[in-house]
Image (cartoon, rainbow, N blue to C red; front, side, top):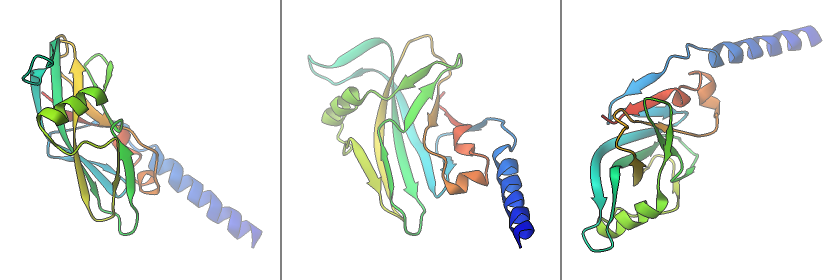
Length: 171
């Protein structure tokens, strides 16, 4: 009986090892295509590049660009809620530099163009949530990509943590 238990554990370990070491090629998506993370999908529904946030004397401008990214979380789980916040997404450029969502600019943008800003979200099972992220990028960045972060969940073992290798093209 002990040998059968050891054999079963060995097979489980081997299956997990093989599934986590799947081809590590990056996956590049277009806006509208979802990043798969266990029972959840993350979708860039739209984006725009602007020079200024606001239309008054306290508007914010910069030499570079603001990337305004409309983002949707789809929870396909049957019984599990999905907590997340505004740091779930980030941008990378062609040189590997990372850029974080600017929550203060997100709040300012919400004042100009309301989208229902929240600091934290809980997307109930079988529902969706949306937000708008604001990223400041220098003018030298020509090829930014959006990526997401998160913990490895059970479903991620079977696709080799694809969500960590998937990026959405924003150009």
